[in-house]
Image (tube, rainbow, N blue to C red; front, side, top):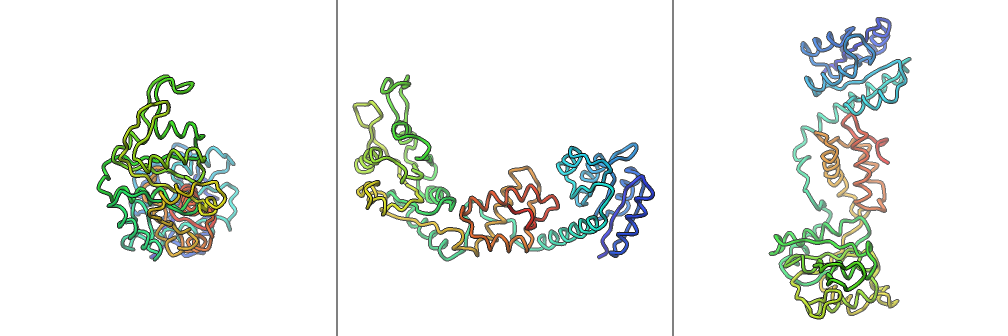
Amino acid sequence: MTQRILIVDDDARIRGTLSRVLARDGVALRVVASAAEALQACSEEVPDLVLSDVRMPETDGLTLLGLIKERVPGVDVVLMTGYDDLATAATAMREGAADFLVKPLDLHQLRAVVARIFADRQTRARRELEPGVEDAPTRVVGRDPRMLELFKLVGQVAAGRTSLIIRGESGTGKELIAREVHDASPTAGEPFIVVDCTALPATLLESELFGHVRGSFTGATADRRGRFALAGDGTILLDEIGDTSPEFQAKLLRVLQSQEFYRVGAERPEKTRARVMAATHRDLEAMVAAGSFREDLYYRLRVVELVVPPLRDRRGDIPELARHLVGRAAAAVGRGAPPVIAQEAMAVLRAHDWPGNVRELENCLARAAVLATGGVIHPQHLS
């Protein structure tokens, strides 16, 4: 199918130059001198791409961009201006321009931009024909054999109330696995509470989990319920349990053994029905051997162990996971359809080792989703 370009510029010399240069590429060209004529041309035959000047009498290019996006949203728009104005460029990209060029135009750059936009349009069109691309799961994504075995374990342990520990490198999604266990359990309607054990010193962590009574320490001006009381029959995830102090570990062990706890400063214990899960990226066996982690607490938590593999060990999951994360990123910034990941960009994603695992991939794609104004993520959009 012939690619159609509409050129909009009030300068006849510019219109002539652009027509001569782009005609070499075999595209269908239509040339007009104003925004009003451009809108009329779009109503008669919808172009694939509009190349428009910014500074025009009556209606400027930025206004034309907005009108085209409103009336014919599938059209890509590239704006051109003789004013090297950063604010105008930023406004154009924010309003949905596919690109922004500064006059005097670099004609090689112009042809490269046009070729890239048409290639992006073809990529998007192919993606629309592929079934199931947007049907990514909302949480844990993966079809690698190790992930399938992990999903099976999640289903097997969800029905019970035993403690469990989730191991894996930082950024692998240990909290998501814990939530999957909770959501598949009979108490899925109860609270799921995450406590970051690295965020608080041992004294405050104890108060956070168990609560305190008024006057038990400076600043305790009223009784306070802790996370164990708030969890009810639900789940408490102690994230990064390996970073806790031996004193806190001893108190947690008593809770797991007796199913009761003391608020800080209280004389009577309170019962808890919450299920305790723990997560860590640390080598707990080495910590037990070194004496920095209690051996009895280790075995009490490790009734069941779930291990989340690093992303570099399941590269086959990266394409599906990347499309899922791009969809989330696009929704977060208020974009419509998420950008498509070009084959070259996907090859880059699959080749990277991802030391930060899924979290690093998510941050990379969140950035790319913002920068991919043409609707396709290319290697240059990846940090």
